[in-house]
Length: 427
Ligand code: PMP
Image (cartoon, rainbow, N blue to C red; front, side):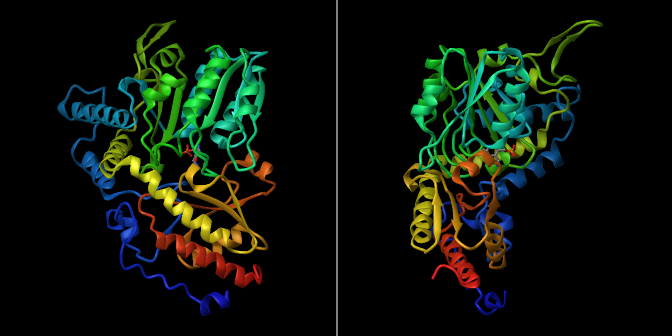
């Protein structure tokens, strides 16, 4: 550590040169000009517009929606419906009733498996995931397969970290009942060809498989266009609000109407019922059938504000911005001795750069970077099956978003060099 103290990073940020969104719009970043936040794939910082919208909701419209006959409750009901409509529009989903608010991607996957999976998967069936799936999808479908006596198949990856489409296709047949894959890998940054994979799954399964796309790393970085993906074969698409600049605790499951209508409820309680008899109960219409209990209105309002903000910024511009930063990071890190970079070239990835530094454990690297104000993630990134295939227990991961600047990337690279000096590695 002495070396570091004698060699501090010259990190006083005077401006936002090269950011897509000004740092000043993010109170947490604005409060600490020296902070280099490179963990946006884990959670994004929140624009002021989100915090303002949530405060305004709680200060002017907070009540339990759906249940009250008074105006304040009607205001809360309207705020919730407006949030749903706004998020659906952002996602390219015309039928807003086909957007179910959930806690996040993890809950969406559990909903899909607990409802569709339990109702439709049985012995002799097959469930297909990929080796790059996040545990939220991988473990959920693995356990569903075990519980239902179905076979669990894993599509392998190419050496540069893409889904091996030949292997993926070879796993699909009329026995396939579920196919799950991520839009973008959180550990590698690989952007998958969603429409092509979904089309293959639909075709090879004869339309019998549920095609589920984990969009946790998709929605924050590009315009998704759910209806077009649904036409190509995607049945369900899930994401988390907190990675889009919204609050933690809210996300969405988007689905094709026919699929959602055929799914039984997965949680019971208030709001999700139509009529409750002594022996039998009937279910409310979409989306309420899947939203038992008091909904998370405040966070839904925050998520709507986040997508409004992202729309104004230009969701389509985010990926290009991140790719330019990824290219800069891959070039600079790739030039250092003893660096292993994982995943495809910048043109096929989002703003995620995963790497290992020979002789420096990822956790040590993250600690050293933290001393310089640089936040990265070290670990298995909830992708242990992928780590096994890479042959490492963990990687270091830097991830970018709209506020990230080339200067941030340079701070990362400087920090990696400093860590190598400290450990006496890298020549
Ligand atoms: N899938 C992917 C690809 C993710 O990156 C994450 C978050 N790391 C999740 C699922 C789970 O999201 P959450 O923890 O918000 O439910």
